[in-house]
Length: 85
Image (cartoon, rainbow, N blue to C red; front, side):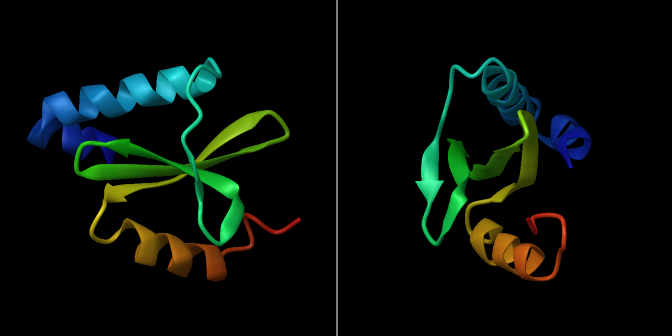
């Protein structure tokens, strides 16, 4: 997704890369995602990143436009065993 975005909109892709770098360095936290206490969201222009930390590993769950990101995330969350304890 980020590769395609870099071709279509390099400025937005660069912003998202910067956000991910800051997340890795623990200098950026984001806002808690309502209904999903273990997840946080960060704005990147028209896009949102939803992520979590598991065992000190940064997991980017989804990067998508704000109009659809929450519905897509909910669908992925409910249909994936990746986030099971």
